[in-house]
Length: 316
Image 1 (spheres, rainbow, N blue to C red):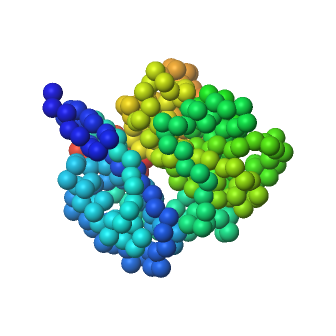
Image 2 (image 1 turned 30 degrees about the vertical axis):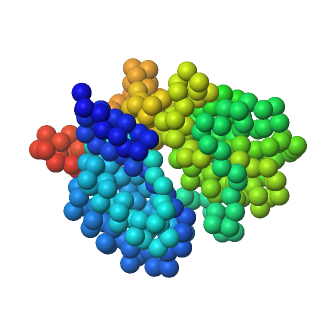
């Protein structure tokens, strides 16, 4: 079987789609002016996914054929301050997005701290190959900056889980718990690195002197570090139709509950409360019957659209 090379990433020809996760903190004076041309080049090249534009930069994940991804990345490199943008690539056997969306936001990752500026300063980057040595030290506290549902399906050995439901809760959690980490170096990680750009800048602003973060995030670690040497346990949640990936960035075993947007396992699907697109054991007490009726109708319309070979507008 033919094997193609994507820089440091190699994949078999049976994988049909390239998935590119990217972000760049840079100053966009007029994000609105960038939206239309970016959406146009993506759609012309049959690339799907979500890209966020804000005054602080760009963030998102896209998927498509090799040529299409290259065309979109070339366009993004031409945006102000994006010439040196880095991205992480993996693959998918089926298109993991139903459509292409380019959205304008106040922040490309929402923390709600107006004084946080990753362009001013961030923590010390640690290469995936050096991460094990760092987090194995007794004077290092390792903090997972992701949300609770992401942490639940996988994290690093010994990592602290802040149990946050959104990234915007992280500053409050830190201020309430910082005494736990006095005298420690702080090592933080997230899926692709973007949340750590903000969280490390935030900690520096809070007076923490020794702050480190995993360069390229969990995705780069799973790509670079052999499974036999890995300190990662479980799978890594990703924000696309694959739901999760494992070592070597192979597609994972989780699905998604389209009611609560949490990852679900085969065990969840066997639970008596599970109803595809409507309910899972994790959200069984979170919605009323009116919500369930809406979810059932949405699921019905999605199935009808799929039977006609189309994508329903309500497809998650």
